[in-house]
Length: 68
Image (tube, rainbow, N blue to C red; front, side, top):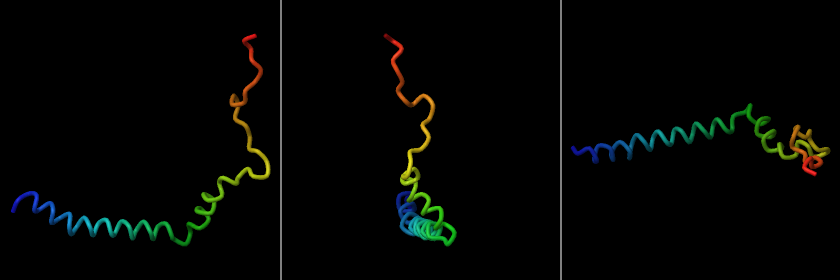
């Protein structure tokens, strides 16, 4: 048996099985019962400072020029 044929047979059977199991595991992990709060927090992070602006980090606001 050639190496290519062996690798092709492994890829056709075991790699397909491994990728299918990984997909099923990732899907179960994403839709697990305790993850609803985490996903809602991630979805609403853009609205975190919707009512008022968030704190401005030091050094990020342009101030008066000291060159003149």
